[in-house]
Length: 271
Image 1: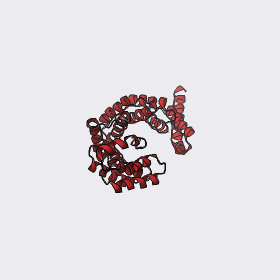
Image 2: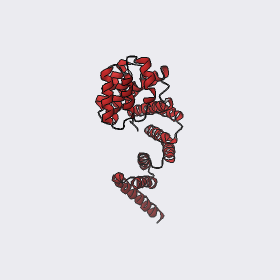
Image 3: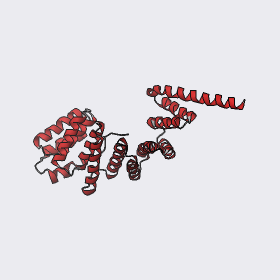
Image 4: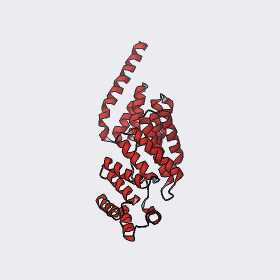
């Protein structure tokens, strides 16, 4: 499940028009700061530039928003980022990216009900006040996928599946769809719809054969259903892909023991 805010919005393409329309007090120097903050690779420099712009105009939505992204993605200061996004919402309640990004922060802090409310608002604001310079497909994919994840956390699996279905329809890029298929598989699994769960795991892995978490989740489900040989194959595949999953060796041993027990039982029946 993804919490990532990186590359969600291309703010730099939106800066000049937004400043002209909503922040007429901004001068060319302020525009320069914000554009430069988007371009620099050093988050410390970007953070300083955003603060310079905020000092010149405390009501500048985009400067605050970019500051929040830096706090969350680079500094891992989730609570600080949440406050910054709240400031953006106070300034402009119709700026839907701030609702979405605050939802991500609340999700990280395990405030799942709060995150759900913010995702709801981001989607509602998007529908009523779309910002054409932001990627609509990318936004809708991320919003519905993340809202589905939160609904799963709240055990509202049927509604979560509805969101995952919508996310899949919104995004044509297969690599992205792998994550949603995996998320939907987990929801199906929780509902006891094991056939659909296995189908979705298969779809996710056909798109992204290196999806370790998906192999692990499918392996656990196969173990639960008594398909120990296939489960062992999934766990072995993960370790081959990434040595950091060596702890799965315990699952492999359990599967091997169960397979041997079945073989012994069959041999005794045939005697």
